[in-house]
Image (tube, rainbow, N blue to C red):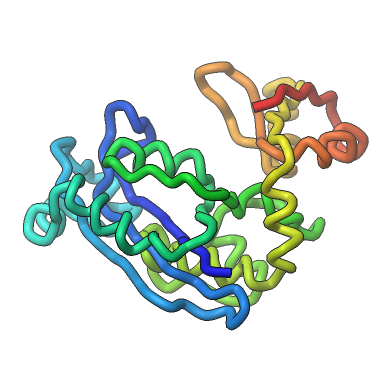
Length: 227
């Protein structure tokens, strides 16, 4: 099967007000576990790149100004690049897809999210990509750069049965909310929950089939809502 692995770097987290600064993509053959084609583009952005984003990604305003291309042109190139793929793979797929849609790139085939569609073993307690790489015995030399994050994600994916992951990607997704006090927030963090400042709750997303086990194993009450 030919996969389109994608990742974007952005000026911030809000796809309605922030913009893409870099797109990385890989055409990946699952049968041979190898990349077939690589795609890496800086994207011109009207939203300035903050010092915080530069510290995180290494991408500067100067780099994007000098080497960036218009977003719509990058989207058109990505459409051509993606034409032979049969499914899209991303790590936190909703985030990447929202930003790509804003550029004019729309994908109409199956989508796999390696955060939730891989059934990780119990010792893997975080879904941060750099930590996942380490948990699987390798390092990403350029974390938070789009192309390298895609290759890292795909190398993690190859450690698992792809067709099991594909089947799991079709299951419903739920949002789990941990019922914990501030004093016990570390219990939620230890199980991979993240803080949602807007709703003032600790949450994580998972497949509906995992919800029963989560409710049983978590050392706190958990409520669930379909996404």
